[in-house]
Length: 234
Image (cartoon, rainbow, N blue to C red; front, side, top):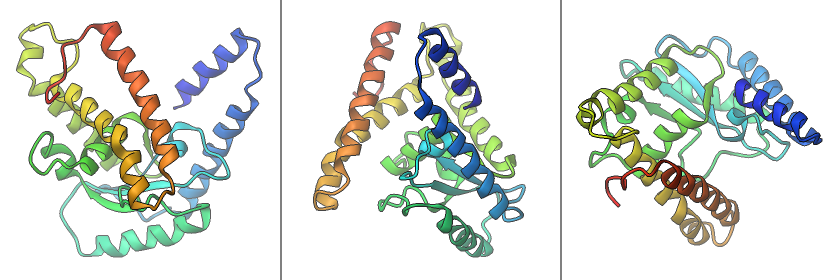
């Protein structure tokens, strides 16, 4: 995220613009992550990482932002994980302006098995796909990174090493499993606002609709500029 921030700052200078609100958001994100590291110090381990996503990971944190956090577990199941999860939630709550989303995607325990082994399987739910894509696209660990780095590396290994067409020179520029996951994530975002409109009795749907429009715009540029084949499942 630091590299992305630097690129934005370079563009700001080239355009002779004043994007002070973006700088404030980046500074606020770094300060909040530092606070989280202090509050959660010693609660993670070689097999567990506290991972944040969303605006905090992107460096776009504002006073109204929530903290989308996850206890990522990459090791043997242990009954004490639940106690650890509760302790993390208690320490995060004073630093958050509001609770994570009501759907349970964040503020939860996530085991690496589902993220790595359920790609495209019957149990690869919309929630699991969303967690996996956000882990790759916009996340960071706020303490020990051992488990976080292993999970990210193993997800990428599955995308890359199991795509025979990619290695046999079939012309694919992007691993097909990854391509399919992007398509699934876009579909999830595209209908999410309708679900939230009903589920939340009209509350919280607007931001989901905005996100869907943004993702669709990026997705369209991705397919058209690279002229990739249609993703699996469409």
